[in-house]
Image (cartoon, rainbow, N blue to C red; front, side):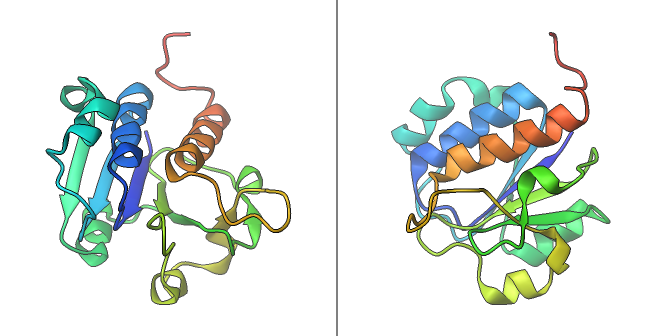
Length: 155
């Protein structure tokens, strides 16, 4: 359906939650190294439960190899500095949703390679830093899926 790309994730439970989300939405999860943890850590397994067998997870040494595997997919960067609300974007199957690490976000060099109209943000109250990564991923994935009429869902 969609590609979720986590750029250098640092917190195991967030990645575990993304694994579970991927399994339940039909998305492919792409993890871009370096990771801030070992994928075998119990925190990742606990959050992902037994969904690792149901989820499609790819691990990439760098963003360039990830983007190469995605081919011509449209990439949307979700970042607090985004210029458009995520709900204003029109998502299509095969799109890639790129999220930065929990502490650093996406580097300027990465953002420079993505068209400005695909820099998305999630509305928040002023003076707050950001949402939890796995919550942000869930919001955007479900909006993209909703726009595509929850294709392949059972309800």
